[in-house]
Length: 368
Image (cartoon, rainbow, N blue to C red; front, side, top):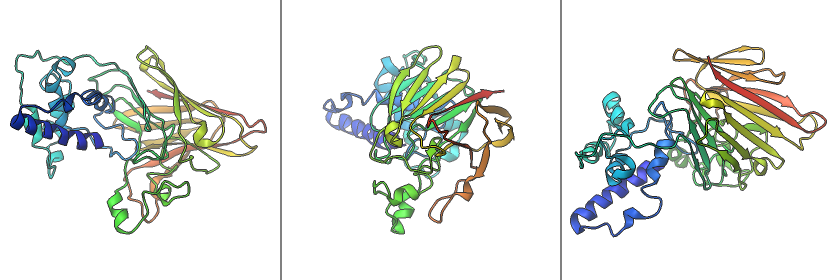
């Protein structure tokens, strides 16, 4: 969302100075700028929705600036008519209401004019997976491009203290069969909170920011140990990212966020199912470990198997431990300052640490 905002105005600036002065003085060739368009492709799920970690809304991607990028580097993207950014054209055709009141919507036409009509209409290949570093470290995995029913996994690492950050270290989103099953809430409307004097931007460990549902530890697909918040100043790290192989594997070291050894492993087996394994150590006996995931799907429970149904699709979540699933409607968790989100619930289970202080959870997701 913020990439779209900043990069759109960069593209406008380059068009203006090049038309008036004949050059952009090499600013458009700065390291990472053109490359960043590939990030946008990886950070968009097969459904067209963003991987909306931190302060990003969940909306469908429609970035006119990407069409400018497509013509800017023909070797990489093949031109705006190549299909590399078909999501932009699909939104224009299928979701015209998206443009109502959108001040930059007309740029779709300007950037989308075919500047290089002789370029073959092909979509250059792109690796299925991406590992992006930085304070908001992420990994994205998918089973295919240009398939709205493909599997897609977004893994979040990094630190809550990153700009616009949340307590989402170890969180994930999941799509399969054209449905987003595990989701993130995205940003709170912070202008509203600022107007009532809410101190939203403090990064203190006990700051008010983390009492906002969408920012703290209640609204992310993570573990919560004994009700404690993740450590704001610390950082999780992806320590293994075996990607662009038949069965990708990602391991995240969350120890710094929980102040004890905690690791989360994602196994994307044959790109047709997901297994998440959590390993925790140095837990005080009987200390609680709460595993949670947000979803908009309908939920049914049969023993340790949770079944989600949505849009004619069914996904099961199985646990290898003797647990009891719980379903909590999100509106039971909101406080007076939170902006409600319709049709949202938290599926979870809780386990108590044994005397050894060691715990391992294995959760398996299957489309049926």
